[in-house]
Each structure stands twice: as structure tokens, then as C-alpha cells.
Amino acid sequence: MRLVLANLLAEDDLARLARVGRPRSPSRETVERVAGLADQLRVFARDGDRLWVPGSGRPEPADEVLAWCETPEAVALRKRPRQVSDGDGPLHEILWHLPAAPPEVVAAVNHRGFHLRVARELGCALPGARMVERLADLGAPGPWVVKAPYSASGRSRYIHREEGRLADPKAVRTVERLFHLHGPLLFEPWMERTADFGACALLTPAGLRVLGFHRQTVDVKGQFSGIELMDETPPGMAETVEGVGRALERAGYAGPFGIDAWEYRTADGRLAFNPLGEINARMTFGLVARARAERSGSSPAAGSGSAAPA
Image (cartoon, rainbow, N blue to C red; front, top):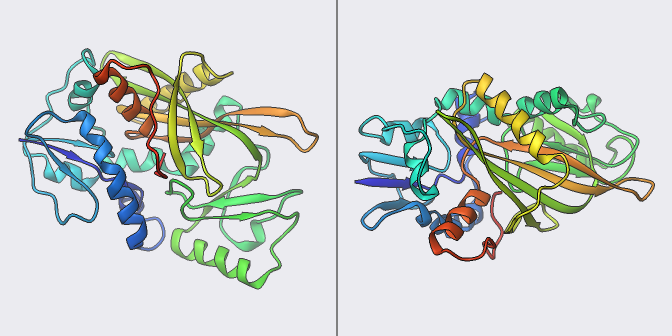
């Protein structure tokens, strides 16, 4: 028996594993939203496989488990070791036979502090980006944002759209609560984004396999709502994916990963490109879209039609 574990809220599990911040539970609205999206992971299933979605009770163990993200729960549900192959074959079957990275490694490489270090190594960190630990560390010439070390789809962040430091008491309380719940936060300048992109790849026993690039539809809250696969490569992203792959491999990670990137408008009106917005060391909806297109034999375009973690 095989189980597809659609643990789309794995960031909360990783935070607990890394002992970052305080335990928290997602809202019912969040659970319902991601449960609705989890059905898309059936693209990796055969007839007779089970799919677990958030909010549906405790999952039952299975001989084989394919998880959205490798967590301690995913490991505990797996009755027997994964049979690892070299990554050949249809995408919807390849994932079942890639190495499963230890959850401790998965937690380390999904932390935004790791993303920042990799961006600095690759020379594409945003100006002024840093990890901050208290209100006194905040402030920039223009708008800025702080993000929890483990978060996705616009969750657990605060955007300051004015120049300078916090003054509004409500905003101060919001940021203080983020520090209280999550510990150190990632601080970045807030850019006027004009387009969003992504890439998905696999780290296999045979090496890095870049699957391709896609455009992402993102709403005003930063929540992903659709995918359009691309034949062309956005500027600088191929080199960035390779650099991220090397960094993940050095850290002991193997399996699927994706990166987010975006185009933005500078203060003087020019368009610029940030080839590394974040690293997702897990399955992504870009990967889901590619598997769906491969299985259907359709043109490489797909979308979810509703907001979702990217």
C-alpha cells in the first residue's frame, strides 16, 4: 500500500523540529484552504494509493510514503525503507524513488537564514537583507518586510509600506508578536513586484536534474494561485538553480526542490530581476504542474485556480 502525504503545512512541523519560536496551530480557514489544494497531489498516485489531506485525522502507516515535505511524521509513517533509483522514468514515479533527506536536514535548509546565506554566496541577496532579533534592528530608507523563518504563501510576515521605523502601536504589537512566536525574522526591503517566476529541480543519486521554469500568479497577499510552464529561461535563473543545488547538496539534502524569483520596479522606475526569492526544499506546485502535463500529454500549462502555498 502506498500513501501520498499532502502535508502542505509542513513549515509548522519544521519549526517545531528546529525548536524555532513557539508551537502554534494553523487556523481552520488555512487548513480548509490547503486541504482543498491537496487533491492535486493525486497526480503522483496510482489506482489504489491513498491520499492524506490536512484536517482528515491521523494518517495510517504505509509501505511507501511520498510526502509533500519530509518531516518526522513522514518518516514514522514509512513501514519500510525507500527503494532508491537514479532518477530515470516518468516524473510521477521518480519522486517515489528519490532519496528522502533526514528531517533535520530538511528543517535546516528550509530556514530563511539558510536562504539568505545562499543568496549572499551567489551574489543576489537584496540590499540590507538580514536576520533581525528585536524591534531596534528594524528600519530602512524605504518600505520593508519581516518574515518568519518558516512560512509560505504570505503567512507570518509584516509589510511596512512607509519609510523609517515602526510608529503605529498596532503595527508594533504585530511585529512583537511575530518575534514572540517565531524568534529571529528575515528582514528585507519591500520591492514593487511586477512578475513572479519559479523553477523546480531534483537532486538525484546521478546529480542535479533541472526540470524547468514557470511563471507564477500571485495575489496581493503574496499567495500563489496558478502556474504557467515556460520553455524559455528567465535571466540568471539557470545559474541560480545550479548554485542552490550545490548548496543543498553540501548541506546533505537530496530530493525535489524549487526556487522562487521575481521581477520588480526600482525606485527610479527601472525593472530589475531577483533570481532567488526563496528556496523550497520539498515538493512544489511547479513540480505538480509538470507532472500533470507529463501524465496528460498536454501543453505545458497548468494552474491551481485558487490560492495555495507555492
